[in-house]
Image (cartoon, rainbow, N blue to C red; front, top):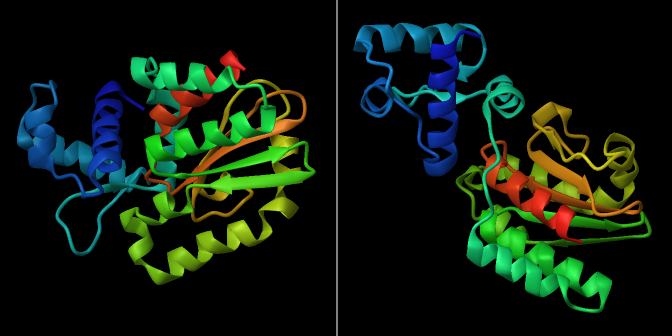
Length: 225
């Protein structure tokens, strides 16, 4: 993908993640530093749509990322940042607690509240804890009843599906699985990492989730435990 396409895709993905609203050419012209004409931006957006990275909702003049667009963004464009100082302090304080399971559950609640997604924690495949379902369902995607049912069913069978995740997340690297690559269900995305040899920490949300912030938090927690 050429550099201008990458810049436009990044702007569309990141703005859509933040606002939930389709992104129009006018916004991109105002926000980008490409110094190109409106016609050029429209043509480049059309190229990204024709290549499968963006789609055009019927009810809007703007565009939104497709699963392919999110996947390319995560693998080739996105960068994780530095964890916020106040959040870092909260994590550090929780990690000092003596009871291992209790502090991991509290970390799950903290992460969920920060990024408004659900968190699933598998303790050695023997027990599964999840939190933040109300945060997850506060997202605009869940105004769609069918989408809500599809995601709800994940929690009914998540214990059975942890084996698939253990097979995918075999080392210390955080995995980001978008849409159909996610074994828990193609209606959502996950970020997953191992806390140690036995335990998994998973963030679950819609494809329009803040991947960068989630990755930053998981990397810090994983390194601090």
